[in-house]
Length: 195
Ligand code: GDP
Image (cartoon, rainbow, N blue to C red; front, side, top):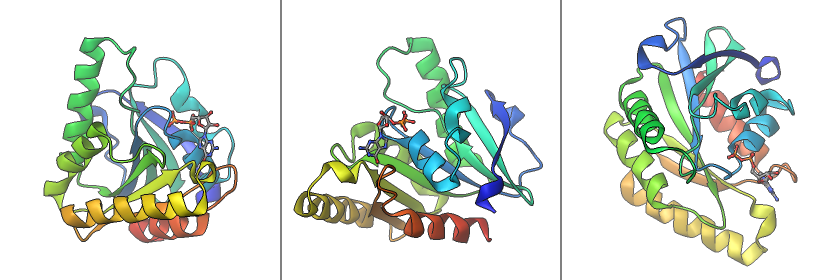
């Protein structure tokens, strides 16, 4: 099913969120954490998330259709210093309200660079999402850049921090070039979508 992912639409206002979505799973993360690579790796389509990197679309919510009214939602990357204040305020509002209010959203996949996990902005995302009672699964990307002992201590640290917030918050190691952690991430994704 994931093989059939297609770009669907770009949304810049909550009122434009597609009502035809039955279930969706969203991907969020700091700019450059590896979100596009993770989406492409999971979808097995090298250019799938390319569209969300197109200038003008980077601050928007991008929908990819998976068929059967299921959608993958690529949320705007955060923490990019060069974005002007007014745009930052807009995406902040868009993200906060989307996470808090979107009923069709089954769960959040949070992308964090395994070398810099749990930044203030990551914690902000988790805080906005916490009241919904929905699950979060963190992909600790670029784990190929850490040795075995550093990657397992990072995973332990993040898992512990997440467990303190909610029993529904989990984490795993991930590497796009090494395709490490694909099965585990794909299983969570499919389970949330009910496929
Ligand atoms: P995004 O801004 O979060 O969408 O990040 P990208 O997916 O564009 O990745 C940012 C940079 O990190 C690119 O140069 C990627 O090639 C690199 N990158 C992403 N994921 C990985 C990974 O798992 N391992 C390594 N070594 N590099 C990665």
